[in-house]
Length: 155
Image (cartoon, rainbow, N blue to C red; front, side, top):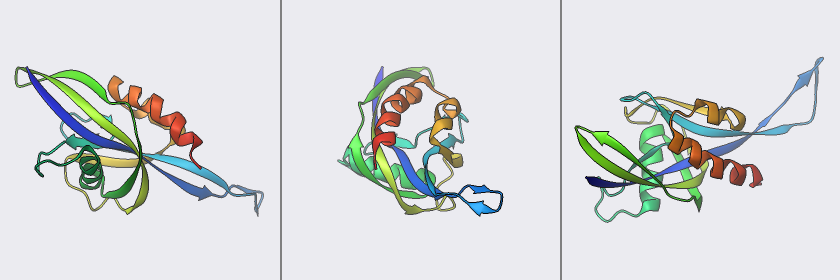
């Protein structure tokens, strides 16, 4: 049995959208979008995350989360608040592994998808209402339940 520790982010951004009705523009309404990534190996839709200290010795959870979001999606984001850590078991090459992931609610700062590594085969900004149906794994859906209400309440 092995133990792994990872960190990542539930990244959001707000955008102003305009609705057009019969050639006149109504009042602007803000949309909230969440960053999701499709893993190139298992093809599941997930929040970006990665192993703590896999490339930088004694790296903090927070530094790992910011780094992994940038590496996997091309997006720079800043941490706003931690979420409750999530743990789950998985099997890799016949070995049982318990993984604990420290997620943070993060806010988009800058960047674009073209500046990312190849660990993710696709990256998208999804409307906040479409996130749960896109997520592949129960553990991510559990994280999303906590994050969604906090993000919706942020101004």
